[in-house]
Picture: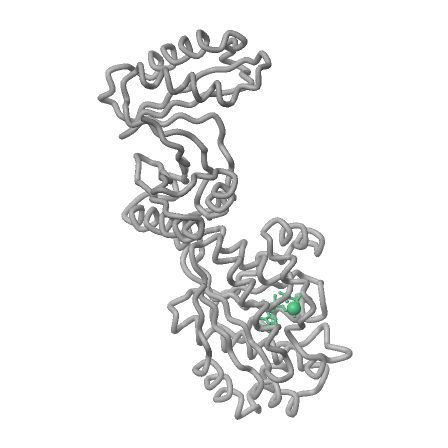
Amino acid sequence: MREKVIIVKYGEIAMRGNNRKLFVARLVKAIRKNIDPFGNFYVALEQGRLVVESRGAEMDWEVLLPRITCIFGILGACPGWKLTDDAIEAIRAAACDLMKEQFDGHSSTFKVVTKRGNKKYPLDSNAISAEVGEAVLAALPQLTVDVHHPQQTLYVEVRNHVYLYTSFVPGWGGLPYGSSGKAISLLSGGIDSPTATFLMAKRGVEVEGVYFHTPPYTSERAKKKVESLAKILAGFTGGFTLHVVNFTKVQLYLLDHVPEEKLTIFLKRAMVHTAEQIALEQKAQALVMGDSVGQVASQTVPAIEAISSATQLPILRPLCGMDKQEIVDLAKKTGTFETSIEPYEDCCTVFVAKHPETKPKRSVIEAMERHLQALPELMAEAAAGRETMQF
Ligand code: ATP
Ligand code: MG
């Protein structure tokens, strides 16, 4: 008996220690979440592997593989067969059938690579490879063995069960989600912040998003756009939490109380400070922002200094040294770009200065901010009244 499965490989090294079980459980949850819409599947634990098996659903590798390899912490996945009979005769027969299925009739070179996780198996890995290679050669005379540069490799893994496969589909890699701490990402509907969020999540940081909206100055569709981005990000991580903060009162207050050219800096500081409050509640140790140095006036180094001092937490800015085109290319690869360019602005022109200051002085900004007496309470109210959604 044999069945079509997907053999999932994950980064063992990042999974050392007590957290290993937790990370494996998270990977299983993320896989199940991504493939559940396609039918009834089961994710089995194997030695150092996860195996996706069908429970009556069609095992369509082309549909399922991309939904598995996108998950952070997964090195890649192999479409293959699981054998219920682990006798060497059964392995030989199945290997011949698999190679026949793949074989396009042209002559080709191949080799067999065996990994024997089950040390009780009566044959060692070299003997298994030799047995299987001999059977394949007899069944497919156009094939020849080349152990150094084979055109095809047939992998045999002998673990609790025996698995056969011929290809490996690489994933994004990264670290298991949640293995590097937690951060709150300031997520707008633009191109940059979803990409920054993606990069930090890829490095194992558990990320929750916070979006500041300004109804009625910003539209419901702008909010829906951020929700769509959160949903895309959830595909990489197994889930994504988004906090939506109504910032209208804060923005109107700032509009009334600060000089126009400084509005952007004050507004960013207010966002950072409010995000910090949420971070402390959610037990996060950092913030994430999508700034790229020099991209706009509020992203010069003096502006970054003047904004960053609004929080005690470190602000991770993974796009800092990237050019716009590099960010766009990455956003296209992650799949957020098409949503980000939908024409619903995350900020209304009422709140954008015509000539924003490019070299704000932190000390001046901080001194001015101390006079904005209603601001702390408005920010606290905004944070407390947030709407939280799970994707
Ligand atoms: P993005 O492409 O991420 O929208 P941007 O190029 O428009 O960024 P700015 O408007 O200067 O640049 O924003 C810098 C960063 O501030 C953003 O990357 C994001 O992290 C944060 N930010 C800006 N606006 C919002 C918002 N409405 N809600 C949450 N975070 C925001
Ligand atoms: Mg933006």
